[in-house]
Amino acid sequence: MLRRRALFLLAALFYVAPVFFAAHTSGAQSGRVVPKATPTPEDQIRVFTEEVRIPVFARDDYGHFDPSLEVTDVLVLEDGVPQQVRSIRRIPASVLLVLNTGGELNPGLRTRTTREMALNLVSSLRAGDSVAILQFNRRTELVQPWTTDLEAARHAVTTKLAGGTGARHAEALTQAARLFAEQPVGNRHVVLVTDGVETPGGGATLDDLDHTLSESSVLGGRAGYADAYKRLQAAGVTVHVVSYGTLGRNVAKQKERDAPQAASGVPGSVKASGVARAGIDPTMPPTESRGGAMAGLPGAGSITFDPQMRRVRKAYERAMQRGEQQMKTLAAETGGRIYLPATDEELIAEGADVAREIGTEYVLTYTPKRPLAEAPPDEYRRITAVPRHAGLLLRSRRGYVAAAAVPVEPDKDQAAKPSETKTKN
Image (cartoon, helix red, strand yellow):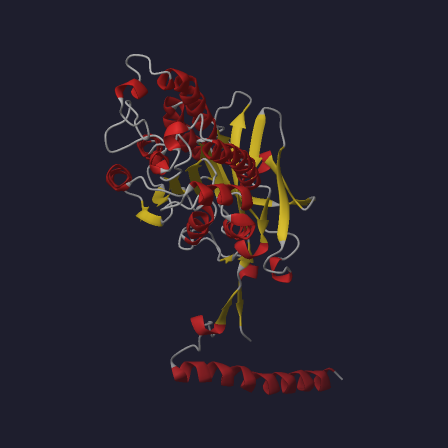
């Protein structure tokens, strides 16, 4: 019995051994080990992650910049649904100055003041920020393309800004939105310096101005403004407005107070001197004047007594009020602010204030729980950034357009996650 079992075990070993030795011999004869196949770049499929980037301004109770904002400090709601914040960081800003150098109906709007304000802003930006400068009147002109050379931007402001007539806001804002096509998403800003009133410029008469101010809506008509607004929203731009409205009203009131003395013919008055009053401003250089081309319009020298001129000015005041309200809405919707300086000095100082405001911004990212791929390109989603602890004040844009949030590849300095790269079978 034992002998039979021994014979059976010997037979089994004899049967398995050739297989083992055959495999071993094959490897030894070839002199190499066949490596495991690795995927080539052609065999890989890149999977992009949907990511929403929104600007968030962070301050403490005293209005100072909070330099320690972290992911756990912020709750983001998209259409009321909490989202998982992936990152919060500071990145260089892209700042586009959109400067009104026309505005002939506003006695306070001066190219020289706008120039000083722009120089103050550019000088206060952080190293690494990009800046571009667009001026508009009845024409729109890019006087400085995007650059990180702040000295070059200052030179462009100093040498290329020039006064004109008219103010075509919708055209300027539409071009402004296009200029962000090649700039990084997230920290984008438009600084709009204007009084918010659309005027034709050129050889416009008082009848033309009266018709424009009475019939057209603010900022280039309803259709023009609506299109520009949509483009800015799609570009993910934060709009800051420095308004000439309050300053213009103050200058106009001062001129009205001075008008009775000038009209009375008292010794030393303009009327008594026999010199035409239109366009004369003793505080200005010979090549510049408050009110731009207004001085050349019929009736401009008799702002107190000419009925048509008074009607135009009243229409302008109403248009400026509409423009101011619409600019407030635009700034609030995009997460920016509106500034209402009362004097030239205050307006110039706002340049540094706007730059400091831009410097308090973080860029927050999250992957939306409702996929963007399933949304129509023009879908608008409401967002709210809520602080998770006391003593933190946050301000962000009110929403974004689905098409503006583009898929992104994983950061190169981070290890790829298993779900980010797949290999073909």
